[in-house]
Length: 73
Image 1 (cartoon, rainbow, N blue to C red):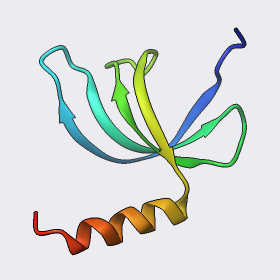
Image 2: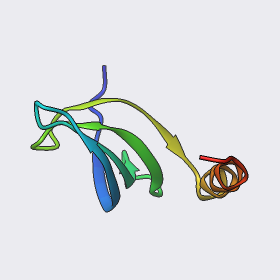
Image 3: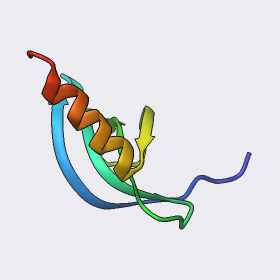
């Protein structure tokens, strides 16, 4: 399996933190040198390990924002 390379370009925000120090974060991440995408996943305290997550384009984030704005949360 090929090595996965990533660079966190910007931390948009931290949603939560577990008792073990893992944080659920929304970041702008460049994967394998590609253009950055919005990325939502759990990260270990040192950012060397990560959980499964989801990546979104800017257009998808805008759609998600619109969907959430229409909900009564």
